[in-house]
Image: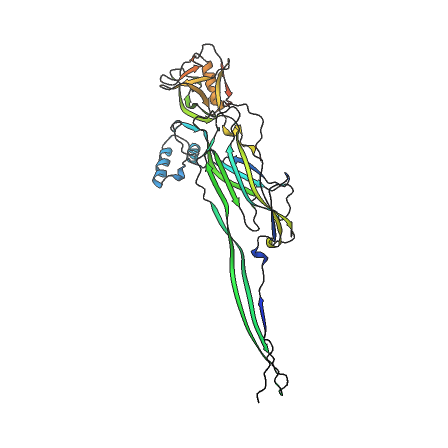
Length: 428
């Protein structure tokens, strides 16, 4: 006789295991904000300094073996004594003055420093995620265009980096359990049980690419972009080597003649106009004015609202502040650095002595050395002068010849700045 078999419902149990990682999160929670107090806002300062001058003079050690031997023989065969020989051997070999043609001082090679700082009341853990600094030449009131432009720079490659955020490993356990407990008459309690388990492990590398430094340079604008990723801040200095040039039509670009080698005295005696000589070179230069820039800073600030005690950013709640700072006018180069010291000859009336080389227009006569300018003034005071040498440059005062009986003196040349210069210290 067949007995009925009662099978209770099959019981299945499915277990899956996994875990989450704060390292693969930017934050626990985030809110956006577009306002910030002045004390919390970051600031930017821009200034420039002259790079060290590279030595471009040739010394004896730079000659070939045969060249050094010939140079030493030539000096040894001269009547110079041993001390003069040693001095000559250690001196650089320079070209004759005037051999370089025109002198261009309307271009300034400088290293630009862009310094970004966090706000005065920034808290530990808050960091700047992104900054965009825009720099444009400042146009003073009364001038038609910018007094300088960015030129002569090297192409700056965008510096893109990749940060390893985390190496994650996740294990997932899956378990299937089944139990069968039928009641079979005459056989007591019976049960049948079984289990099926499966374990799966996966791993992943989380990385993030960001623009560490990007620079966009045009003649009248420069944009510096910096970004960061987890744990990195974009405060600090950025250095850019470039050249500042006076535009051709700028009121800051001037021209004159620079006195080179001259011979006005011989063995303590003053030479006559026909026996004297002087070389002059065309000179272009910046006006002696402050060079200023307008600087704007746009930024993105990660501000912690909770979880500041954690170094792991994935455990923090944050507020992302996106804002723009005020545009400020800053002195990039002081007037004294825009043009080095130059000297001129002034008459007692206050008019400047002009010079006109043969076949050229008359321009102001300038000197690099105050002593040379004083010697020239003394030579002019010794008698009526119209030119320096039989075929040399002519001398005038305004549109006419140098008047007889006028007295002259050397003076500092201020540089023809087209606008008044208020006291404005370099922002540092």
